[in-house]
Length: 456
Image (cartoon, rainbow, N blue to C red; front, side, top):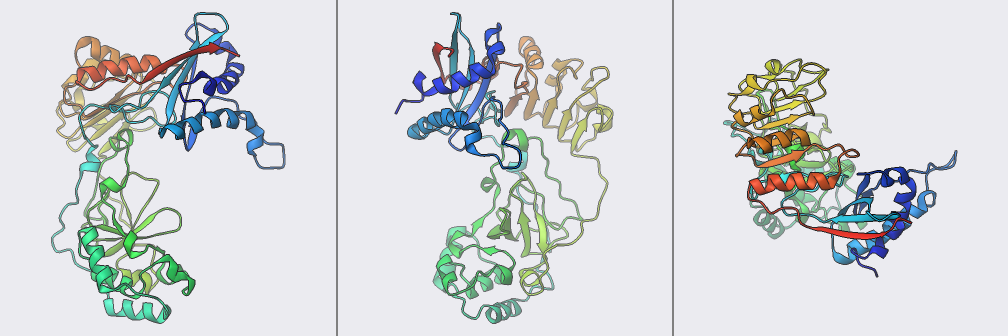
């Protein structure tokens, strides 16, 4: 099989790209770019809609699937997670130059783009919400509805043929998890251990329990490490748990013991680190689409299993100054309106007035993230006065100003280059990224292979 770096692996895709982007690839500086991984790809080829009256089929875009399939097979052969590419016209007429960009230890992968992802400027650094641990809640106690004997008795009545976990299995699970199982969860597994092979003689206990029960051996702690959060998203979030919250709005917690699933990818857990208005051992749901937070399902396992309560309790709406502020033409009207001592994240978006000064947020002690749209800053060098920044996301022009002025903040943990996918050449963005990485003593992006061939 041709290797990933063999031009014959890429020629079928290059022919399709040349046909679709002939004008772009013949113009000075013209380029097309994409990203391909074993499980999916983002490639700029026109989509062929299905015939009216039927669903889309692979055969509708068979040439694309076949061309990319060669690259996917080469990736699998090498055990690679993916590759980005840039195609541009070569100096010789009728030829193109292919740049293959492989992953770098200094860069978090981008999302469906060939442009560099987040630049990692410090070893092992994580976004602040990921680092956040649960706050202690003095006096937290089980809900009045928690009744271990009632729960155990009800489960045995509803699942008379269930096989329960032995004391040895329970002890092994506690040793693996590093936590003592709370009484209700222990009672649940004492009645039904959840092994899939048991279901041959026992109907799926979903209707009885209210979720897809994981086998005891698959229960796990949903700490922050269990929920992968990219820097570009985590840095733009903030943990905010008020007195009215039953669940601490964390990325994860050492007190969240996952024991099931709702059937749609959201995890069901017992919570041993409740919020100020919560209960020890309450049942929560951890969404698979969000980066932060969890919702209340029931005040106790008894409440969920015995009484069929699944909707939690309403959370009172409390008006507070936002920890994450968006200044743009439809949200907050100024940086002054966003500024307050608790502000953690400032995002400046599409702006149709005069560029903004950052002076109103100079002295804010918790401001750790700044993201700015092109042309919105009156003086990008003011960023150097934001001494608590951990994450900075700017367009290429603003980064250029900071680099030329020697004004890049010294305490950053990560950085993003907000490049326009079509207009900005990823190769230029990589050169800019390497300047920033070098400034922080980080390894540059070097995994670039150049191949050249006839355009068609």
